[in-house]
Image 1: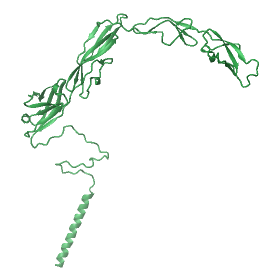
Image 2: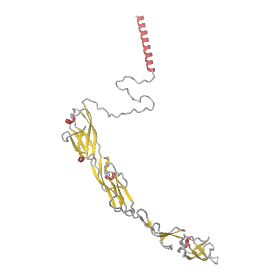
Image 3: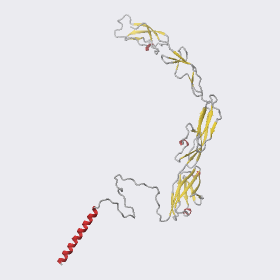
Image 4: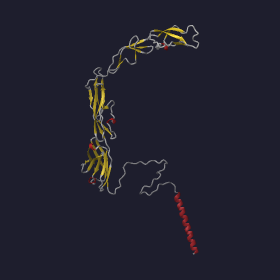
Length: 372
């Protein structure tokens, strides 16, 4: 039988959470009663076994006391530019709950006491500035009006060169973290796109940087045989609207006379009359676009010349068998020597056959003379 008074666990908040002896339960009317810290409530315990009803005392009135909170005060702390503050609150050493009052009557959720950091209030004018250029990043430094702390921000270089495979500004990465593109632009090969990047320093201060995106382009090579009078075409990925001029071996050509330029993206066609003025060999073609130069090769050959392969040296591949020559390899023209193998058996066999044939021929001739 339970005692007439009990001390509940500090973490128990209802009568139903208080443990009774075996075969006893709390009455349904009392099980949900609230247990407040430091207070006492009365509840009824009922005997609950198969032979209940056979005993004189099958109910007991029990006084239940829940221990009071052991509260510790956390004093108020003002927030700074970079650190959070907090309001005054209390926490219980027994149950770990948090309260807004010293009596522990009003429980509050975790973190509700936090006062967010205010952030820096910066002077609008920087205290230091290093201007970026096409190759080097710059920087700008601001000072806080409240704590005097300084903040330095790196500024991206003002020029970015990208390949012609990128189509949108959002595909271009910025070299300095924290910067984002403020504008959206389409990228065209051979063009220069002026874009704005932004950096949010504080809620009320955002700085920007103007960056030129130079979209490079690529071109095919061409070849021409002197006297063939065939036009030669070189194609470049740059858009025609960004094309400015063309030179061969450093000499600027006249569009419409020595060559034509058509859209798609850029199609350069050299006139045969001009091509016939060039000497045999390789010539360097430079096409100038807004974003820069792109080079191509123009090979001029004479009639009857066999075009040479690319001068890239091809290294022989080692044979897995360790032999001096790979299977299927033929003797180079102009060299009659066969590769030595170290096996003379076929030569000896031919000599023996030749000797035997001569001997048989002599025998036949002698027999023929004797008969005659």
